[in-house]
Image 1 (tube, rainbow over the protein chains, first blue to last red):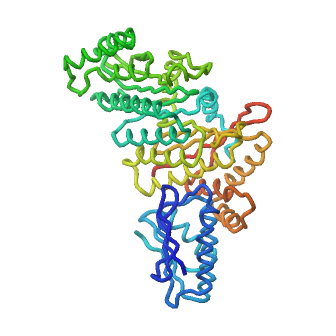
Image 2 (image 1 turned 135 degrees about the vertical axis):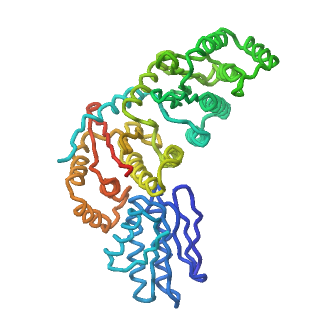
Image 3 (image 1 turned 135 degrees about the horizontal axis):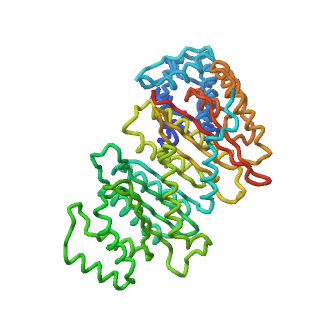
Length: 124
Length: 381
């Protein structure tokens, strides 16, 4: 499967989705002008991956600085897919937040509770 | 009870109305550091590139901005007088094809006569004589201890091709505010014929009034432009320079999130009568008062939409934080609609992050449009 790699810009995050190396990561800030368009290839990639996931545990890292509400909705779609993936393959979502950043922590908790899917909350 | 039609916000509409001829107004009051200078310059660069301003004009504007900002940082005198506000003032405005760059800083009264005679002399000289005067000063080499030689003013007059406007406003027996404005325009043949452009002196007086208002309302920044994603990125960078050193990372992220929601709201949802241009006309204000930051935006909306927007805001304001969480989740789980521009979560997110109700105000502009102001209070503790 082809790797999806996006370099960070001033308003979009760094994305690495590399099944071969086993690296799944979205980091930095995320407030694109058009969140639906930005997340389309990411969601598409995860759907592909769902078809033939790795045999080892999928560790998905979210190291977001901040994101806009339009992205928040697209992230929810991504988590729905990851939850589906967890039926086939062990998935651990590592949700990073800065020490004291209750906004980022509660965003992670929101997704986790909504989907009834435990996240690994990692304080930085 | 929701803060419906909050009259304390009304002055913003007045400001917006007074600035409506300008396609850009960037007004800042505070301490100007080298770091902030760089951010201001890059924001202006973004704006000028965005509207494909001719390179010659861009270079001139850039040069004059640098000189004005250096004048401020170099002469930003910090008197050991706790009662005197020594912060500086910096403005860049665009009107038609003309740029107006204004600086304001504190000066000692005893220097006023020297400054006045120097500026009057420069204003009395034509192009050729300015060149001679420049050489004369340069050969004398009487550089002041601050690194300038009075060459800055001459250069600004030469590069701009216009007279320098200035004014002094007395603070007390020792200090005054020194306001200084340079107009930059394209060569004569391309000069714009905007009806407002000849009000040079009036413009400086008006800015002095705005400066007074800024102090009264505890503002740091007024930014009026056609908002786009690029200007949002510029503002975030500015805000970083502005509050970056004094506030914790976590707080800064909160402020950024709120600014993003408010400004994306403008360029995604505002109604602008001029549908041809790329951005949406609006105003952004940042202020600090009694341990809180105040973030305010204003933009036009169709009056026919006012009730719907009010209802959305009241729904958010009337909800408890628990109810808001439920509302947020409900909206987040909805499917995207065709042509959807946002998630519909902005107001909820702003209240959840700020911990405060959202203040707002609508004013009637004309038969079709209303001016929509929104203010978020974000306590620093």
